[in-house]
Image (cartoon, rainbow, N blue to C red; front, side, top):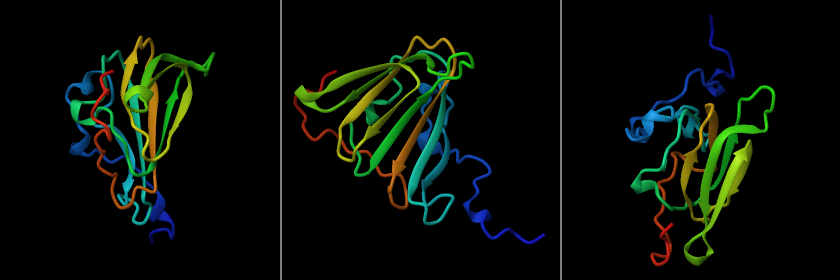
Length: 163
């Protein structure tokens, strides 16, 4: 049977890059994350990033030290989706996300299915998961990342970043 014309746009299984493996996080989230797009992999020309991560239990912090507060040169979208069929708004746990830098840093907490848009250049992180009663889904989308998910950039200002 001949390959279908648009088969090149169908991703039949996630990428499981060893580059994203974090042993500390493996006990409470799917590791490595289930990535569906990483720049031009596996779809040439896509230039986007998409990953799905199941959060299974509490974590004092999901981001390893190398991925603490940082920013990207592309827009990013985080989505946190609960699976309570009787109340889809109920996340099943709590997310703590920091945005901003220095004195402008702000902490946000979510216990409902939520989304957060992170414009390029906005400092963000760390992200913590707490009080996880049921697994929930954490999705990340990076827009116009180029041919591969961009390396994170360190804080623009070094002073006042303790969180």
